[in-house]
Image (cartoon, rainbow, N blue to C red):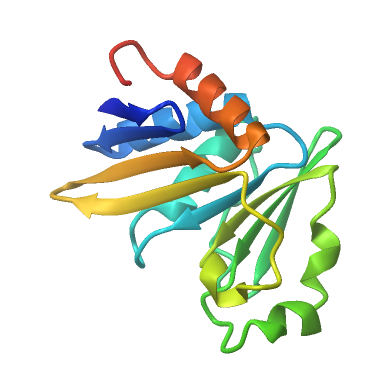
Length: 167
């Protein structure tokens, strides 16, 4: 895993293998705070759910972690913290976000990972951190971009938790 800072609001990493993806998820987990909205952007199979699973494992969640493609949302209770993992891939219209009552999950007491946030455009609260994943040969390119002050704090902490030489 190696990376570079384009600027202080963006961190780019090359994830050559699954071990590097798990290390990135672990670093992200160490930086998570209640209230964060994290948008996961990438094609099908880019590793969005894999990154969330790695973060959950690092937070000592031992149960199954599956893509919420069909359920729209999966809830993970971690001690006194709630983590919601959304997948809006199947939404045909952004209004379906409202119709499904999903806005109630966006409270300060929880962390939200959202796959396919563009499918609920106009109804989602602002992202704090954008996570972009792209295929790169056999590995992945991971880009983390802070959008808010809370996202910047998270990004700074992620950098501090990466293995030596990773960023």
